[in-house]
Image (cartoon, rainbow, N blue to C red):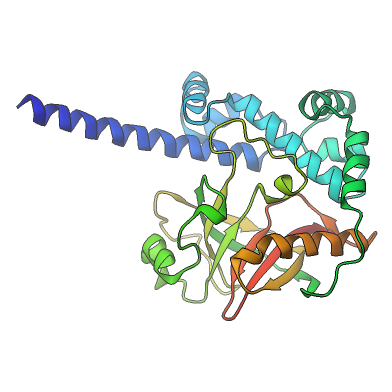
Length: 295
């Protein structure tokens, strides 16, 4: 009798733990999505329906870091990407990363990377100086109208997710949505790949590398009224420009990414990296890397 009770209690504990981690995942995503906004812990607590003290305690338990420190790290990672891959001035970058005071941004950046924003940019620019990319890949600038994605967050790098992009993986995860969204395309979004590329990604806390997996909807589909599985969320993508590079295998992602970055750096004063997550779409005969741009 005691064995059954202990087993039941363990099961209940695991369920409660999973529910709480799902809530903290929503909290982490909200922090990422609002990096440029002056919102606080009360706003986050209201968003996920918990008290501020619960959010602080449970977020630290899930990610080994406080919500405010986590947001600061992600803001500075985005700032590092924009410093390295765009000509935006430091004041513009500070605003895009949620800092409304140039001095406070510079101090925070110096503490994190042991370099001023200006010196970080100069150092990275020297490291990225390469000849114009050889046309192994074909990169072009495209424009996308409003679209939607349905995504699930995974706290792993894409290279560590077995079967990513395979039909079996896709069907297992999204079986209830396939019939209604037949024209959708398998997609991953990569919030950390650019920060990793400029050596700015923080790996000192749990779940530092993230991959969003799901469906990229066709322009005739709308998931507004579809009940999504508990781990998934709907993402609205506004009209934007993006750099598109096609490649054959996920093992070539790093090369395709580097080629695209060099293409954009040589294409001065036209389009620049926005800092939003790049995507990889599974097309019929190839993969397509898309990097969102500031036009």
